[in-house]
Length: 588
Image (tube, rainbow, N blue to C red; front, side, top):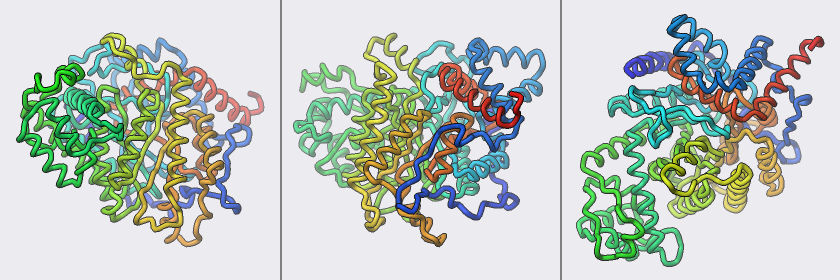
């Protein structure tokens, strides 16, 4: 673990070097949403014969990609990759092993090891109209790690859906969590320094605190949400002041705590609309140890929540440290005008992640307080393979309207399917995952459709942007049908942007007003989707991980497992590569 920290600091020193030797592209028009003279966005075609997505790759790059995709199909290699690498290190040494990995999987799926490699890759993508989502992708694997799939395991798992990077952190110490804040700061700084147009950085909150603590925070959040639902007489999604007092007393009748919470609600103008995010956020912010649960005042509620989570003073201090770290990273992104994606994680962490993420949105996406941009800075992520995802999107959007902050959402299908179902079966609760892939597709498409219709209803592109409540959605998907459906919905709703203004000064304002939709795919995959979108003027991004080779090997193993599990997609990639090679050499 200490070697991971040392390597991280080496990268940080590299990231702090000046960019004067790497000239920025002067024109960022390729990142603007392009439309034709009729005012409608150009509809891309994804036919490989027309687009040739790999035509800019060299022959060695094509052959490398073909080799990597072929290796992904060899399941024993993928499933036992870690053991094979360990054996190779013992026999041939680290230098040889890392060189082989770097020439294959690393170059295919990662942006580089240091500052200059990352910046070069970002600018190479920009030439094709593609932005970047930069993420330091080292995964910490501490000693004594369980090899079984449990609530806190960091063991790699096979994934069925390619959309959400399944990167995980193993908790070792608060000092290491503090070090990651510095890592995330430098990642955001790199995005700011190297990027043209709107760019993103991504983080996982399990990297900023103890996952077991996040699990307890999530349990508490679910219990509070259940309590609110039981006392929300009109099913409006929140409680009035009087309803809150009644709900709180049903759990534990502690006047000091009730008064403290009500005082905080009043300070935040939450007089008559207290939802579970408000309740949890302010509870986590208080320096009050949870009192003993009331066991006699409301027997029916005790049956609903038999044992509400009670935090110790030590846990409260750790919660505050986690929130401080998250706030520091978000503030860095806001100060540098870099959008920050907070990744979704397993369902047993997600309620706590939502509480923290939405709290950051309320602070940094505030319509009335943003100085440098009138767009969402903080984006929460929704995994649409979860049965409750669409309801959560609707609740969170309604809250953003009620509270007056911009709503930023990244939509993915999900990355923890096997683990979610396995845990549900082992513990004995209903699986939170949709029963079929088609159900997940339907949920994803319905969620995008809902948000686009809300944009159509709420956002008048000719109004004063300073007073607007904006909605921005990133469709992170490798599914061609979903992308085509999104574009069809844009046409149906006439959600097209006006032609780009002629002056560079107005182009940035134009982008601010119209950047309500973007697409994203993982770097090294689905170029046949990303490149046509970029060349036709759509906002599109590649998720670009970086780090030292040894540090990002767990990430690359997950990428290989994803490719191996989704056989159809990997076969499609290989076919496109062979088509391109055939174009180069008639003998193929």
